[in-house]
Image 1 (cartoon, rainbow, N blue to C red):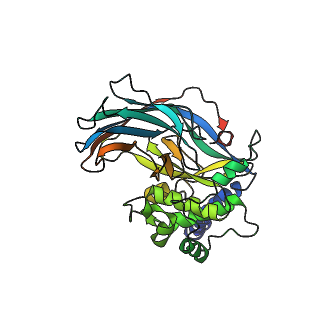
Image 2: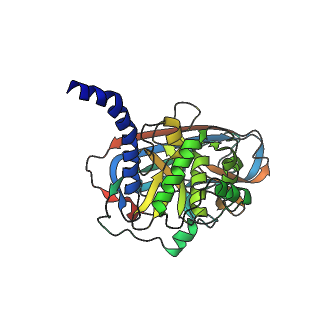
Image 3: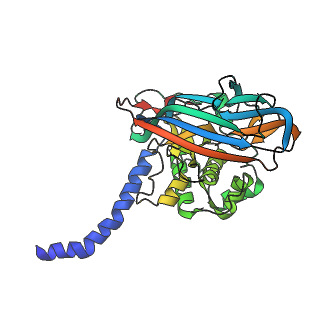
Length: 369
Protein backbone atom coordinates (compact mmCIF):
# COMPACT_ATOMS: atom_id res chain seq x y z
CA UNK A 1 0.00 0.00 0.00
CA UNK A 2 2.83 2.36 0.92
CA UNK A 3 4.65 1.58 -2.33
CA UNK A 4 1.50 2.32 -4.31
CA UNK A 5 1.10 5.67 -2.49
CA UNK A 6 4.74 6.60 -3.12
CA UNK A 7 4.40 5.65 -6.78
CA UNK A 8 1.36 7.93 -7.09
CA UNK A 9 3.15 10.83 -5.37
CA UNK A 10 6.18 10.62 -7.66
CA UNK A 11 4.42 9.68 -10.90
CA UNK A 12 0.66 10.16 -10.68
CA UNK A 13 0.48 13.47 -8.81
CA UNK A 14 2.63 15.47 -11.27
CA UNK A 15 0.57 14.03 -14.10
CA UNK A 16 -2.66 14.96 -12.33
CA UNK A 17 -1.39 18.52 -11.78
CA UNK A 18 -0.76 18.81 -15.51
CA UNK A 19 -4.14 17.33 -16.43
CA UNK A 20 -6.30 19.42 -14.06
CA UNK A 21 -5.71 22.76 -15.88
CA UNK A 22 -6.54 21.02 -19.15
CA UNK A 23 -9.80 19.75 -17.66
CA UNK A 24 -10.57 23.22 -16.29
CA UNK A 25 -9.87 24.77 -19.70
CA UNK A 26 -12.09 22.20 -21.41
CA UNK A 27 -14.85 22.97 -18.91
CA UNK A 28 -14.61 26.70 -19.63
CA UNK A 29 -14.59 26.14 -23.39
CA UNK A 30 -17.56 23.81 -23.00
CA UNK A 31 -19.42 26.57 -21.15
CA UNK A 32 -18.68 29.15 -23.85
CA UNK A 33 -20.94 27.72 -26.52
CA UNK A 34 -23.67 29.58 -28.36
CA UNK A 35 -26.94 29.01 -26.56
CA UNK A 36 -25.32 26.99 -23.77
CA UNK A 37 -24.65 29.82 -21.33
CA UNK A 38 -25.97 33.17 -20.25
CA UNK A 39 -24.64 36.09 -18.21
CA UNK A 40 -26.26 36.68 -14.84
CA UNK A 41 -25.91 40.02 -13.05
CA UNK A 42 -26.32 40.55 -9.32
CA UNK A 43 -26.43 44.08 -7.83
CA UNK A 44 -23.52 44.52 -5.46
CA UNK A 45 -23.18 48.24 -4.76
CA UNK A 46 -24.74 51.64 -5.30
CA UNK A 47 -22.40 54.50 -6.10
CA UNK A 48 -22.19 58.28 -6.00
CA UNK A 49 -19.24 59.48 -8.06
CA UNK A 50 -18.10 63.06 -8.50
CA UNK A 51 -15.64 64.48 -10.99
CA UNK A 52 -14.58 68.05 -10.18
CA UNK A 53 -12.50 70.04 -12.65
CA UNK A 54 -11.45 73.66 -12.21
CA UNK A 55 -10.36 75.23 -15.49
CA UNK A 56 -8.29 78.41 -15.73
CA UNK A 57 -7.13 80.16 -18.91
CA UNK A 58 -5.76 83.72 -18.85
CA UNK A 59 -5.40 83.90 -22.67
CA UNK A 60 -9.02 84.22 -23.73
CA UNK A 61 -11.28 87.21 -24.23
CA UNK A 62 -14.99 87.45 -24.91
CA UNK A 63 -16.86 84.42 -26.19
CA UNK A 64 -18.82 81.31 -25.38
CA UNK A 65 -17.69 78.15 -23.63
CA UNK A 66 -19.39 74.79 -24.17
CA UNK A 67 -18.76 71.97 -21.72
CA UNK A 68 -19.70 68.36 -22.54
CA UNK A 69 -19.87 65.19 -20.46
CA UNK A 70 -21.13 61.66 -21.27
CA UNK A 71 -24.52 60.63 -19.93
CA UNK A 72 -24.19 57.28 -18.19
CA UNK A 73 -25.88 54.58 -20.30
CA UNK A 74 -28.01 51.75 -18.94
CA UNK A 75 -25.85 48.65 -19.44
CA UNK A 76 -25.53 45.02 -18.31
CA UNK A 77 -23.11 46.10 -15.59
CA UNK A 78 -24.92 49.23 -14.39
CA UNK A 79 -28.49 50.43 -13.95
CA UNK A 80 -30.74 53.12 -12.45
CA UNK A 81 -28.09 55.63 -13.48
CA UNK A 82 -28.27 59.43 -13.40
CA UNK A 83 -25.99 62.21 -14.64
CA UNK A 84 -25.75 65.84 -13.53
CA UNK A 85 -23.35 68.52 -14.82
CA UNK A 86 -23.08 71.94 -13.15
CA UNK A 87 -20.86 74.81 -12.10
CA UNK A 88 -20.11 74.48 -8.39
CA UNK A 89 -21.89 77.16 -6.37
CA UNK A 90 -23.94 78.42 -9.33
CA UNK A 91 -27.62 77.44 -9.51
CA UNK A 92 -28.44 79.62 -12.52
CA UNK A 93 -26.51 77.69 -15.16
CA UNK A 94 -28.32 74.51 -16.19
CA UNK A 95 -26.91 71.74 -18.34
CA UNK A 96 -29.07 70.19 -21.06
CA UNK A 97 -29.13 66.65 -22.40
CA UNK A 98 -28.17 66.39 -26.08
CA UNK A 99 -27.38 63.69 -28.64
CA UNK A 100 -23.88 63.95 -30.06
CA UNK A 101 -23.33 64.32 -33.81
CA UNK A 102 -21.50 61.07 -34.66
CA UNK A 103 -23.16 57.92 -36.00
CA UNK A 104 -23.03 56.53 -32.44
CA UNK A 105 -25.66 59.09 -31.35
CA UNK A 106 -24.69 58.85 -27.69
CA UNK A 107 -26.32 61.09 -25.11
CA UNK A 108 -24.25 63.83 -23.50
CA UNK A 109 -24.75 66.75 -21.15
CA UNK A 110 -24.04 70.23 -22.53
CA UNK A 111 -23.37 73.31 -20.45
CA UNK A 112 -23.22 76.72 -22.18
CA UNK A 113 -21.42 79.62 -20.50
CA UNK A 114 -21.17 83.17 -21.83
CA UNK A 115 -17.94 84.95 -20.81
CA UNK A 116 -20.08 87.82 -19.49
CA UNK A 117 -21.51 85.40 -16.91
CA UNK A 118 -18.33 83.58 -15.89
CA UNK A 119 -14.77 83.90 -17.09
CA UNK A 120 -12.06 81.28 -17.43
CA UNK A 121 -9.52 83.99 -16.64
CA UNK A 122 -10.35 83.66 -12.97
CA UNK A 123 -11.28 79.98 -13.20
CA UNK A 124 -14.54 78.03 -13.41
CA UNK A 125 -15.17 75.02 -11.11
CA UNK A 126 -17.19 72.30 -12.85
CA UNK A 127 -18.86 69.39 -11.13
CA UNK A 128 -20.03 66.16 -12.79
CA UNK A 129 -22.14 63.83 -10.65
CA UNK A 130 -22.88 60.20 -11.45
CA UNK A 131 -25.15 57.84 -9.48
CA UNK A 132 -26.41 54.32 -10.02
CA UNK A 133 -26.15 50.63 -9.16
CA UNK A 134 -23.33 48.32 -10.27
CA UNK A 135 -23.74 44.62 -11.01
CA UNK A 136 -21.32 41.73 -10.68
CA UNK A 137 -21.61 39.52 -13.77
CA UNK A 138 -21.03 35.77 -14.04
CA UNK A 139 -21.32 33.16 -16.77
CA UNK A 140 -23.98 30.56 -16.00
CA UNK A 141 -24.27 27.21 -17.71
CA UNK A 142 -27.41 26.30 -19.61
CA UNK A 143 -30.01 28.32 -21.42
CA UNK A 144 -31.11 31.69 -20.12
CA UNK A 145 -34.21 31.56 -17.87
CA UNK A 146 -35.80 34.15 -20.15
CA UNK A 147 -35.31 34.67 -23.91
CA UNK A 148 -32.41 36.97 -24.77
CA UNK A 149 -33.49 39.70 -27.21
CA UNK A 150 -31.68 39.76 -30.53
CA UNK A 151 -29.78 42.85 -31.59
CA UNK A 152 -31.78 45.15 -33.82
CA UNK A 153 -30.48 45.82 -37.31
CA UNK A 154 -29.32 49.27 -36.17
CA UNK A 155 -27.53 47.84 -33.11
CA UNK A 156 -25.81 45.14 -35.14
CA UNK A 157 -24.62 47.74 -37.64
CA UNK A 158 -23.38 50.00 -34.83
CA UNK A 159 -21.32 47.24 -33.21
CA UNK A 160 -19.78 46.10 -36.49
CA UNK A 161 -18.90 49.47 -38.00
CA UNK A 162 -15.52 50.98 -38.78
CA UNK A 163 -14.55 54.39 -37.41
CA UNK A 164 -11.49 56.62 -37.21
CA UNK A 165 -10.25 54.93 -34.05
CA UNK A 166 -11.81 51.51 -34.70
CA UNK A 167 -9.83 51.11 -37.95
CA UNK A 168 -10.07 47.35 -38.44
CA UNK A 169 -10.36 47.84 -42.22
CA UNK A 170 -6.70 48.94 -42.30
CA UNK A 171 -4.81 46.61 -44.73
CA UNK A 172 -1.89 46.13 -42.33
CA UNK A 173 -4.26 45.16 -39.54
CA UNK A 174 -6.04 42.63 -41.75
CA UNK A 175 -2.69 41.15 -42.84
CA UNK A 176 -1.61 40.84 -39.20
CA UNK A 177 -4.87 39.12 -38.31
CA UNK A 178 -4.42 36.59 -41.12
CA UNK A 179 -0.80 35.95 -40.19
CA UNK A 180 -1.72 35.24 -36.56
CA UNK A 181 -4.58 32.93 -37.50
CA UNK A 182 -7.20 35.21 -35.97
CA UNK A 183 -9.89 34.37 -38.48
CA UNK A 184 -13.03 32.57 -37.45
CA UNK A 185 -13.03 29.02 -38.82
CA UNK A 186 -15.97 27.55 -40.75
CA UNK A 187 -17.87 25.89 -37.90
CA UNK A 188 -16.28 27.83 -35.03
CA UNK A 189 -19.03 29.38 -32.95
CA UNK A 190 -18.77 32.94 -31.65
CA UNK A 191 -17.92 32.13 -28.03
CA UNK A 192 -15.18 29.63 -28.90
CA UNK A 193 -13.64 32.12 -31.31
CA UNK A 194 -13.78 34.93 -28.73
CA UNK A 195 -12.13 32.60 -26.22
CA UNK A 196 -9.34 31.87 -28.69
CA UNK A 197 -8.76 35.58 -29.38
CA UNK A 198 -8.79 36.31 -25.64
CA UNK A 199 -6.17 33.63 -25.00
CA UNK A 200 -3.96 34.88 -27.85
CA UNK A 201 -3.98 38.50 -26.61
CA UNK A 202 -3.51 37.68 -22.92
CA UNK A 203 -0.61 35.32 -23.67
CA UNK A 204 1.20 37.61 -26.10
CA UNK A 205 0.25 41.09 -24.92
CA UNK A 206 2.38 43.33 -22.71
CA UNK A 207 1.13 46.26 -20.67
CA UNK A 208 2.87 49.54 -21.57
CA UNK A 209 4.29 50.70 -24.87
CA UNK A 210 3.21 53.84 -26.66
CA UNK A 211 0.10 55.33 -25.04
CA UNK A 212 0.88 58.91 -25.97
CA UNK A 213 -2.46 59.63 -27.64
CA UNK A 214 -5.60 58.41 -29.35
CA UNK A 215 -3.76 57.38 -32.51
CA UNK A 216 -1.35 55.13 -30.59
CA UNK A 217 -4.26 52.99 -29.40
CA UNK A 218 -5.80 52.31 -32.79
CA UNK A 219 -5.87 48.59 -33.64
CA UNK A 220 -3.74 49.17 -36.74
CA UNK A 221 -0.97 50.50 -34.47
CA UNK A 222 -1.37 48.22 -31.45
CA UNK A 223 -1.25 45.00 -33.50
CA UNK A 224 2.35 45.75 -34.50
CA UNK A 225 3.73 45.58 -30.96
CA UNK A 226 0.95 44.07 -28.79
CA UNK A 227 2.14 46.50 -26.14
CA UNK A 228 -0.44 49.01 -24.92
CA UNK A 229 -2.88 49.76 -22.08
CA UNK A 230 -6.50 48.86 -21.27
CA UNK A 231 -7.87 51.12 -24.00
CA UNK A 232 -5.56 49.74 -26.68
CA UNK A 233 -6.23 46.10 -25.78
CA UNK A 234 -10.01 46.60 -25.58
CA UNK A 235 -10.03 48.27 -28.98
CA UNK A 236 -7.83 45.54 -30.44
CA UNK A 237 -10.08 42.75 -29.14
CA UNK A 238 -13.22 44.47 -30.43
CA UNK A 239 -11.53 45.10 -33.78
CA UNK A 240 -10.69 41.42 -34.28
CA UNK A 241 -14.24 40.44 -33.38
CA UNK A 242 -15.83 43.00 -35.72
CA UNK A 243 -13.49 42.05 -38.56
CA UNK A 244 -14.88 38.51 -38.17
CA UNK A 245 -18.50 39.62 -38.22
CA UNK A 246 -19.06 39.44 -34.44
CA UNK A 247 -20.73 42.46 -32.78
CA UNK A 248 -18.39 43.92 -30.16
CA UNK A 249 -17.99 47.19 -28.29
CA UNK A 250 -15.74 49.06 -25.88
CA UNK A 251 -16.73 50.68 -22.57
CA UNK A 252 -14.83 53.77 -21.41
CA UNK A 253 -15.02 54.86 -17.78
CA UNK A 254 -13.37 54.75 -14.37
CA UNK A 255 -13.02 52.45 -11.37
CA UNK A 256 -15.11 53.11 -8.27
CA UNK A 257 -11.93 54.02 -6.38
CA UNK A 258 -11.28 57.59 -5.19
CA UNK A 259 -8.37 59.37 -6.80
CA UNK A 260 -5.29 59.64 -4.57
CA UNK A 261 -2.76 60.99 -7.08
CA UNK A 262 -2.72 62.29 -10.66
CA UNK A 263 -4.12 59.02 -11.99
CA UNK A 264 -7.90 59.33 -12.28
CA UNK A 265 -8.73 55.59 -12.05
CA UNK A 266 -9.37 55.39 -15.82
CA UNK A 267 -10.25 52.03 -17.32
CA UNK A 268 -11.61 50.51 -20.53
CA UNK A 269 -13.26 47.12 -21.05
CA UNK A 270 -14.74 45.26 -24.03
CA UNK A 271 -17.83 43.14 -24.67
CA UNK A 272 -18.89 40.80 -27.48
CA UNK A 273 -22.40 39.65 -28.29
CA UNK A 274 -23.51 36.02 -28.54
CA UNK A 275 -26.97 35.26 -29.90
CA UNK A 276 -29.25 33.69 -27.24
CA UNK A 277 -26.62 34.43 -24.56
CA UNK A 278 -26.11 38.23 -24.58
CA UNK A 279 -23.18 40.57 -23.98
CA UNK A 280 -20.07 38.91 -22.55
CA UNK A 281 -17.50 41.14 -20.73
CA UNK A 282 -13.77 40.94 -21.50
CA UNK A 283 -10.85 42.62 -19.69
CA UNK A 284 -7.61 41.85 -21.54
CA UNK A 285 -5.37 44.24 -19.59
CA UNK A 286 -6.73 42.97 -16.26
CA UNK A 287 -5.51 39.51 -17.19
CA UNK A 288 -2.10 40.76 -18.30
CA UNK A 289 -1.49 43.00 -15.27
CA UNK A 290 -2.80 40.76 -12.47
CA UNK A 291 -1.75 37.37 -13.91
CA UNK A 292 -4.30 35.20 -12.03
CA UNK A 293 -3.89 31.42 -11.99
CA UNK A 294 -7.16 30.97 -13.87
CA UNK A 295 -6.31 31.78 -17.53
CA UNK A 296 -9.91 32.88 -18.13
CA UNK A 297 -10.45 34.86 -14.93
CA UNK A 298 -11.21 38.11 -16.79
CA UNK A 299 -13.47 36.58 -19.44
CA UNK A 300 -17.21 36.63 -18.78
CA UNK A 301 -16.81 37.87 -15.19
CA UNK A 302 -16.86 41.30 -13.55
CA UNK A 303 -16.95 42.34 -9.89
CA UNK A 304 -19.17 45.43 -10.19
CA UNK A 305 -16.49 48.04 -9.53
CA UNK A 306 -16.36 49.74 -12.94
CA UNK A 307 -18.48 52.69 -14.11
CA UNK A 308 -18.85 52.93 -17.89
CA UNK A 309 -19.15 56.55 -19.03
CA UNK A 310 -19.93 55.75 -22.66
CA UNK A 311 -19.86 53.06 -25.35
CA UNK A 312 -17.24 53.01 -28.12
CA UNK A 313 -15.06 55.74 -29.58
CA UNK A 314 -15.19 58.82 -31.82
CA UNK A 315 -17.65 61.14 -30.17
CA UNK A 316 -18.67 64.43 -31.76
CA UNK A 317 -20.36 66.59 -29.09
CA UNK A 318 -20.68 69.53 -31.50
CA UNK A 319 -20.33 69.75 -35.28
CA UNK A 320 -16.63 69.38 -36.09
CA UNK A 321 -15.64 69.00 -32.41
CA UNK A 322 -14.41 65.41 -32.17
CA UNK A 323 -12.83 63.32 -29.42
CA UNK A 324 -11.95 59.64 -29.47
CA UNK A 325 -13.38 59.19 -25.96
CA UNK A 326 -14.42 61.16 -22.88
CA UNK A 327 -13.40 59.94 -19.43
CA UNK A 328 -13.37 63.59 -18.37
CA UNK A 329 -15.02 66.87 -19.38
CA UNK A 330 -14.68 68.12 -22.96
CA UNK A 331 -14.45 71.90 -23.43
CA UNK A 332 -14.98 73.87 -26.63
CA UNK A 333 -14.29 77.63 -26.84
CA UNK A 334 -15.88 79.94 -29.41
CA UNK A 335 -14.43 83.43 -29.08
CA UNK A 336 -11.36 85.63 -28.74
CA UNK A 337 -8.03 84.27 -27.60
CA UNK A 338 -6.22 80.96 -27.75
CA UNK A 339 -7.98 78.40 -25.54
CA UNK A 340 -5.32 75.72 -26.08
CA UNK A 341 -2.49 77.92 -24.83
CA UNK A 342 -1.54 77.99 -21.14
CA UNK A 343 -4.80 76.56 -19.84
CA UNK A 344 -4.72 74.73 -16.52
CA UNK A 345 -7.09 72.18 -15.07
CA UNK A 346 -7.18 70.77 -11.55
CA UNK A 347 -9.10 67.50 -11.55
CA UNK A 348 -10.36 65.19 -8.80
CA UNK A 349 -12.35 61.91 -8.93
CA UNK A 350 -14.20 60.90 -5.78
CA UNK A 351 -16.49 57.89 -5.24
CA UNK A 352 -18.70 56.71 -2.39
CA UNK A 353 -20.21 53.21 -2.49
CA UNK A 354 -22.77 51.35 -0.42
CA UNK A 355 -23.46 47.59 -0.57
CA UNK A 356 -26.78 46.55 -2.07
CA UNK A 357 -28.62 44.47 0.52
CA UNK A 358 -31.50 43.17 -1.63
CA UNK A 359 -29.98 40.75 -4.14
CA UNK A 360 -32.15 40.27 -7.21
CA UNK A 361 -30.32 38.59 -10.12
CA UNK A 362 -31.12 39.64 -13.65
CA UNK A 363 -30.03 38.68 -17.13
CA UNK A 364 -27.44 41.21 -18.24
CA UNK A 365 -28.35 40.62 -21.86
CA UNK A 366 -31.80 42.10 -21.30
CA UNK A 367 -30.36 45.58 -20.84
CA UNK A 368 -28.52 47.07 -23.80
CA UNK A 369 -27.66 50.40 -25.36
